Figure 1 (cartoon, protein in one colour):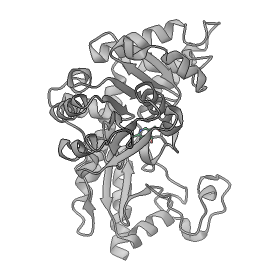
Figure 2 (cartoon, rainbow, N blue to C red):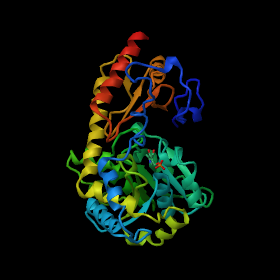
Figure 3 (cartoon, rainbow, N blue to C red):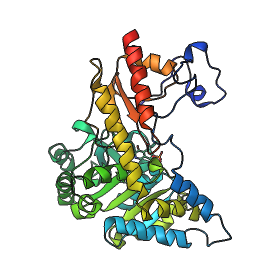
Figure 4 (cartoon, rainbow, N blue to C red):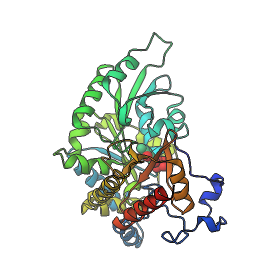
Length: 380
Ligand SMILES: Cc1ncc(COP(=O)(O)O)c(C=O)c1O
C-alpha cells in the first residue's frame, strides 16, 4: 500500500546507515541527518519505563517460556484493561498476533473479511493466508479506512454453495490504518452483522492504546468497544507504544483459546526469555504509562494537524483521532523535505502521505517539520 521515499535511492540504501549522502541532502535544521521522527511509530525507541523494566528484570534466573512472575502479572494487568477474565498469549509482533488469531477462528476453506486498507491484507506478506492454511482475504472498501454494515452484508451473503469461501472472520482495526477510530456503536453494529452470519470478530489493536485514549475521553472503556460490543479476540499492541517484541493475543472466551499455545509455539513465537517482554507490559500497564504515552502521541498528531490546516496547499485526508496524520502534499514539497533528511511514507494514492507521531515525538519536532514545510512550500 505505502511506498518508501526513494528519490534516487533503492530501498536498501535508505535504511543503510553507511549510505553516502549528497550535499543537497543537508539542511540547517536537520543538521544533514536522516530524521525518522515521523516515519513510523515503530521508529521510536523504548519508552523509559520499558527500558528500565528490561534492566530490572535482568536479575538472577527465572522460569522460562512465560512461566515467570512478570508474565503472570502482565496477564493480570491485561485482564484489568478489559474488566473481565481473559486468556492472554504473548508473541513478538503484530503480524504473528493477527495471523495466529485469525487462524484460530478461520478454516482454510473460509475467508477473512476486512477493510481494503487493513494491515492483514496489505502488509503481512500473506501471513494470515499462510497460517490459516489458505483462507481467502476479502477486502472491502469504506470511507476513512472504516468498514460499514451496508458494504459488508453483500459480502456475507455472496456465498453460493461450496463454490465461494464462506466468510469465517470479520477483522477490524482499531485505531484504523488511517488514524480514525470506530465508536463502540459502530463496532457493535459490525459485530452484530458478522455474528448474524456466523462470523467471529477479530480486532487488530496494533494501536489499541491510541484508540483507548480517544474513546476514554468520550466516556468509553476498552470493554465497551471490544467484548461488550461483540469482539472475540484482540491483538493488543505494545510495540508502537514504546515497547519491543511485546504484542499480546487476548481471547474473551476460554473455549476460543483452546490449543492456542501450540499455535504460538509452532509459529516460532514462544519466547524462551519471555520475562523481558512481560516486564515491559507490567511497567507500562501497572502505572498507567501506556495511556500517558499514547495520549501524548495523539496530542502530537493533533498539534501537527492543526498546523497543517493553515497551509493552503495541504489537505488532511482523514480527521486524526489517533497518532497518525494523513495528508495530501504537493510532490515538490515532499521531495524537498526528503532531501532535507525527513523520512515519511507515501501511503494513500499519488499524493497522500502518512506522518506518524509516537510517545517520543516532541512538540519541537512537530514545529520543526511544520517550519520546514513552510520553507519548502514558500520556495516551491
Ligand atoms: C494496523 C497494524 N497492524 C499490525 C501491525 C503489526 O505489524 P508488525 O508485524 O510489523 O509488528 C502494524 C504495524 O505496522 C499495523 O500498522
